[in-house]
Image 1 (cartoon, rainbow, N blue to C red):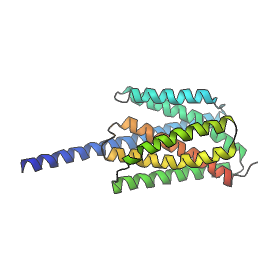
Image 2 (image 1 turned 180 degrees about the vertical axis):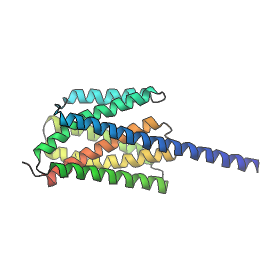
Image 3 (image 1 turned 135 degrees about the vertical axis):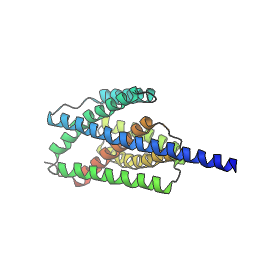
Image 4 (image 1 turned 30 degrees about the vertical axis):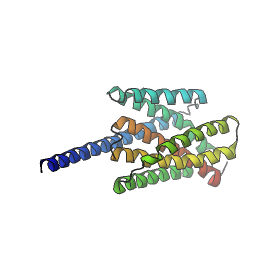
Length: 224
């Protein structure tokens, strides 16, 4: 009887901890997405020039590393807002390019944004309600991200539009898988740090949005 009571107590404590991490992750994710959107809006209305690819990579990986290194302290919150703010700065000029290059640019952006939101909510709801463990996807997703990133970088440098479109489709699928993977990791207790979880899901959503925007513009964009 005592053993059963202890087991039940430990299970409830684990459930409470999991729910807390999930709640904190979604709260921080919402705040960072809004902050990133605000920075993107400011850069758009001021027509800020896009950073070169090397500055983008240094800022993205550098701030991401700082956030991970400080994920167990309050400094981690400062770092994650710096990171998502920088990503908003990167995003603003990209959105301006789509808005100015396509007569239906606003429709493309809003459609991609809406699709990103629907996909995220659907996959998160499925992971939470089904409680399926997607940890088996970890190795495949890591390898897929690495390959897609290198190929995408090559497509951008050597200006290969068709290859870039294929990479965008791959990144959309990979990002969807990462949402399932990271949400499942929180639910099953393998991810207990909400700052690390937030930055992982944020990057999945960022890449998903841009991938959908590229795909939509390629098939439904009306160039001016």
